[in-house]
Structures are given as structure tokens and as C-alpha cells.
Length: 499
Image 1 (cartoon, rainbow, N blue to C red):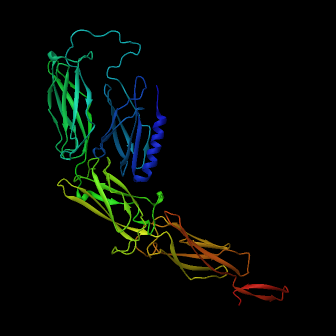
Image 2 (image 1 turned 30 degrees about the horizontal axis):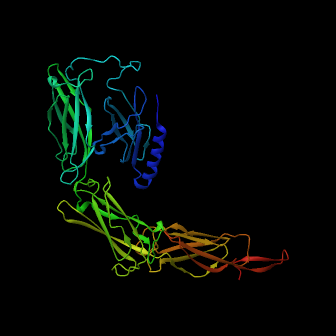
Image 3 (image 1 turned 135 degrees about the vertical axis):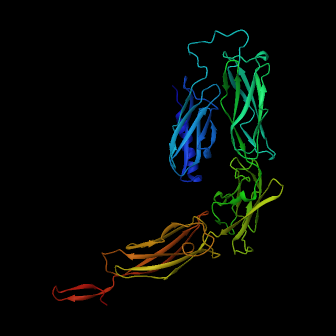
């Protein structure tokens, strides 16, 4: 049997790399392959669905190599997850897996058996002739869309199903064998979604056509077709067909804008072609049910006080829209919060055609730092230590930009502990751990009693441009004590603590 796991593994590693930045520590990844149990060939377009627990309900389609993957499954405890794989003309297969937070399961494979599996040595030369017999199976011929929108959003709100009813020899039934096909929703978000018509009589080609119409809630809908053969006492059931209903209009309490950091380097700087001076501003847009809004919803952006920002963006399938913000050489001074502060504004339109807006306060800081230290000279006694406090701000008195690198270096024979090597967090106000720091320097040289000159250097490297500011202070490192004559040994000796 043929397997195609190599690409699946590469794909999974790529997904893991991305999600390591975007998902929480508890999120789970499940991936694998769906293949033909007889030939081992991968099945393109097979559906893999999370059946239970219901709060995790979702589905994905396999690619050309039969690979599928679920990412961002958020659980907080060990959970039993039931998966079902299905494909047209194949029987369903279900598996239950026990998953713990942060698990990565990359070999949950499914082998589906064809519904009418035939001997591979059979060339199919014996064709069935004559008129078709009674209905024996329901086959999905086409589905106009696997994804539709919540009603009244202006997008596509229906998906059209075309089924063919065939006899036991695979021949489409004709008008004489016409049957009624009942359509039902097995599971859905419960927002008023419906199938119209719910009962359809097959036509001369054995076909029955119906449509799923969305309601006012997003989620996954499972539709089933059923035929009751009362003449022979059997029920014919199709494999469930899955359709995703996407979100509705933006809601004011589900609209947010943000950046990775609120303190960014950019005061008085023109970004030019420096990609390090481009910052993503992200809008998260949900509907009143907490679902992502319809893909393609427009969000407008502008700035007040500083910066250049792209004017608009469209939401993706997750309800997020992203634009670039760049420093434009401005030096914002008019914001009530102080020098360097400015505002980014985002807005969209709700179901009543009213504007929904949010403001985001940001801080542009300078590339250069202002460093002060106390005490301002070095005087470290023998085997002793000296404590220092130091202050670092940008040239406007604000914390340096988020991610700026701080380091303290000392001369040979000394050791520094405390705030001596770290990347600054995202701060917009001053204070301990933001602009105020400290460290202690200790004498570690036991070999020399001589007083020697020494130095301490504080270095700050800005986060985006890599601009470096340093401050160095000088002083001495010495053994305290004095020389005395030892009459017993007739020699001079150094006595610590003697003046």
C-alpha cells in the first residue's frame, strides 16, 4: 500500500512553526492522511470532521496527497476527541483519540473502503443492461459551495446540493422508479438554518436537488438525504454533507484593534525601505454571536498625530484585517498623554449601517537612549561589592521601545549581578523595571592586592534600528589594608583592613 507521509510531515512542521507564535501552550494539532483501503492511493477532497466534544466541532478537507490537519484545538485537560473521515463512494471511518493539552498528533490516518469495491482483476467488461431497478443508493453529484455566509450579510447565503439515486447496479433510476428524497439537518449552529425544499421527487435522470439556506449563526451544518423504501422495508441514507456558515455583521463589542507592542521605535524617523520599521496593526472583527465576520469585510484605518498607515484592509476567514504602520519622520507632541504619543483609529460598519470604531494609543520612541547611573564612579573594596542604580529613557523621558537590548559589562576581576542583560518589555510609563534598574558589582580577584583602575559600561541597543547608546564610568578596584613588618619571618606582609 502506498503512503504519502513526507509532505504531510513537512506541512505539519510549517504549521507548528507558525502556531508557535500564534497559539497558546494548550492548543493541539491533529494531522494525518486519508487513503483508499484497497489501493493505498490518497483521497482528494475527503472530509475529516471532529464529531465530539461538540464545542470543538469542525471539519477540514484533504489535499491532493490525502493530507489533512486541524490546528489551534484549544483544550485545558485530557480530552477524548472523536474523528470521522468520509468521502463520496466510500464508507465512513471513525476514530477516537485521547488528547492532552499541547499534544501534536501527526499520524491519525484513515483508510476508507469503497462502497462497491470490485476485484482488481475484473476489467469491468460485463455491463448491466436493461431498465434500472428500484433505488439502492444516494450519491452526491455536486455541491455549489462548502462555505456560505450568515443571512443578511450581503454574501452568498445558500448552497445547492444535487444528488443522484441509483439502483444496485449503479444505474440512475428513471421516472418510473421515481422516489421521494427527504433532506434533514443532522447538526448545525441553531440559528435558523434550513433546507428548502425538504422533500424532492427524483427526475428522469434520477436526480434530486435542494438547497441549504443559512440562519443568523455561524457554524458547521451536516445535511443528510434519506429514502424510505416501504415496498421492501429498507431505509437508504446518504453520507452527511458538511457546509460551513461564516459570520455576520461587525458588532461594537466584538471589534478591537491592536499591535504586538504599544511602544515602538519611530520618533523623528522616516521608515524608508527599512522593514524593521514597519509595524502590523491588526483589527479583530466579530459578529454579535462571537463568530468571525464575513470574509472580505472592510476595515478603515487612520492615524492622528504621527505615522503613515495603510488606509484599509479586508478581513480574512478568521475575522482579522492587517495593515502596515510606518514612522514618517514626525515628532508627536500634541497628545495629552505626552511627547511621542499618538492615536490609531479603526472603523467598520454594523448591520444598521452605523460606524463601529476603536482607538489605539501608541508611543513613538527615539532610537537613542539617555542613561544615568548612581553612584557615578567605581570604588570597590577588597573582596567587597558596590551597588548601583541606573535610569534609561528615550530622549523624551519615555521607556525605550519594546525589545530594546540592555547589557552591563565589567572589567576583569569583577562580576555584576542584577539588571545586567535583558530585553525590555512593552512599557509606556516610567518606573521600576521600565526605566529604573539596578545591579551589584563584586570583587572576584583573589590573586592581586594592588589597587587597579576599572570600569563599568552600560549599553542599550534599540529594538528596530539597532542604534547603540553607551555610558562608561571609571574608578578603582583595590584590596583594603596596609603593609606591616613581620619580625618572626623578617618580611613585609599585607594585612587586610589595616590603614
